[in-house]
Length: 358
Image 1 (cartoon, one colour):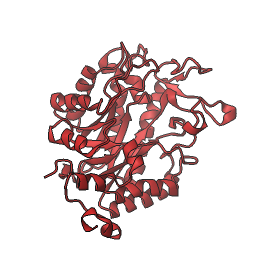
Image 2 (cartoon, rainbow, N blue to C red; image 1 turned 60 degrees about the horizontal axis):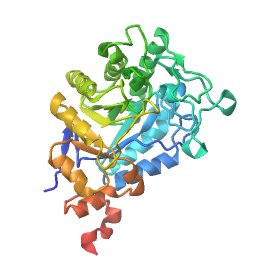
Image 3 (cartoon, rainbow, N blue to C red; image 1 turned 120 degrees about the horizontal axis):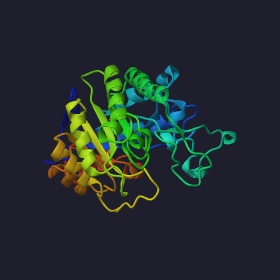
Image 4 (cartoon, rainbow, N blue to C red; image 1 turned 30 degrees about the vertical axis):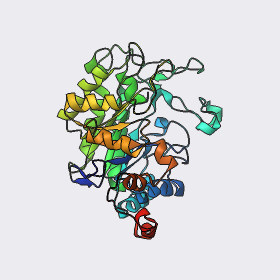
């Protein structure tokens, strides 16, 4: 029996396998609105057999977008298309999730194929915000604006409103994006947060905003549905956020009712030194799982069926998230089931294509 293709219960949800499509920005929206690209992109991966599909970083406010082409959920008008997407995913034996995000100081950049550069107001950009007025890149003309108390309160309120919309739109998992150098991670990392008030300095203060956001999300999210938090387990830079702090945070998240910690890493600073290699972030997920006693998701250069099977079988994580490999192969889960000799549900329209029937 395959461990990767075993069921996994998260509150009222029973995932048919441990394969999750990781949130991946498509840079294909206009004014935050989803379109048929997102329907086909996400829907194809539901057809392809994944148990959970998490929609890309979806901005809780216009200024929280990474680029002008990011998805958004700051307006009730965004909900209609999302309902179509979530309904399609559910029709194909998968669950739809959404990652709620604020880009912080890494906002207002162009899409990757447009150079990924900081946009000026003349180019359609906007002023970015952060815990402290520290540039992400020394090449940026202006530092981000340091959030005052009113600005912080707005961020919390925006996550709260976005959660209400996400539930109305039909998502079954909500993930709070606290990784990759975006706003909530910026507050966590001493390399981006030099505040001297109650949101800076100590571990307790630097985690305060994330925990306030979590409370706001929980106030709008049904208790029978799970909440994930994505973290960068380490900044991979001296003096930055580290794995010890990630474990300590995960213990708090567990106490507060978070269901899964999605363990990524890096993104806070440009001088990070990441030892990239197959499964290089899996040890973070394993340590968080074992020391905080919370379910974890492993992500990062996991590309093969047996590699993913071994992660679950050895207890290093409870879920495996696939990003680029899922872009390469929307039917990844169907292929992996074949390679592991595991049973899985095929769409009836594709049934005649199963390898066993060739």
